[in-house]
Length: 159
Image (tube, rainbow, N blue to C red):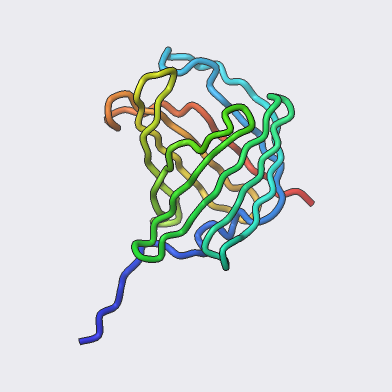
């Protein structure tokens, strides 16, 4: 009997993000306080494939906020999932991974972290596009029952 492994994703899921980008960041000024005030600031990003195309690295420069960031995205061919690992020049540690996959054209990723010492569930939503992808981060203090979007990145391809 021939058994075929079904995967939900592929190593090409993040190919839309490969290249150089300008980023418009919108970050909520105060989390979990019913705030609707957003801090807007620019960033640039360079994304390239590594590990024979099964991973990518995203180097982000955020001079307006005085730091740089790095995302390492690793594809797991056994289950089609991705693990997303973030670090920045302020912390110099890898934050806990956010894990998920693409389904019906959207990427949905979940993980656990802390926000000001309080445990939170984290959700990343990726909306792929060849020219204007969108990333949104949300936190939940109630295990995922309710979410507050606190950071949005609008990417535009650099010429």
